[in-house]
Image (cartoon, rainbow, N blue to C red; front, side, top):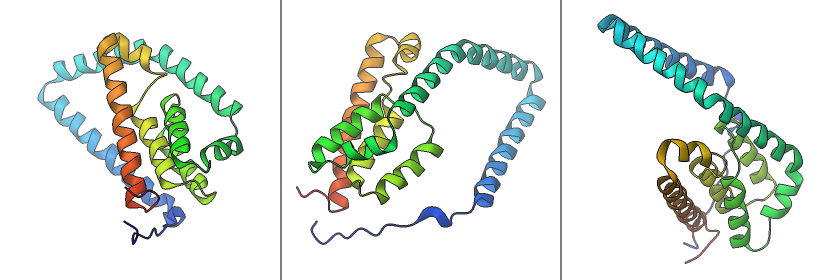
Length: 183
């Protein structure tokens, strides 16, 4: 794949109103489906709302604790430290560090992807960014207690191990496709 050339697209031209319009459509679709459900069977829809609210309230304390831990972690690890370790000359070490960091971090996509854009501009390889974002979205070390409560110990561990393996495969494939790694 030596002939593969990477063209970096600047996504800053994406305007905020376009994102807002998409979100409004999502709200309209969700509201419409809820309305259809309510018209079809008010009793079941009300019961489903009560169940959803109860589950949300049950999960909320654990979610808030995870959110506080992530905020603390991001406060203690400034962006410059992340860039220093992920921009390591050995791509595999950078990939493993990014995978581990992604596994123990919880961030929403609207924070992760701009952060990756900043890291990309500072010279971090696509392979490393791929490892970071994929493990961030798929592996949950901090969410393990919550997963264990709902899925059980064995399933939660197995799901995280399989997700970690898939994330590493995706990162290596990204490195090959962008010419950062030759097999």
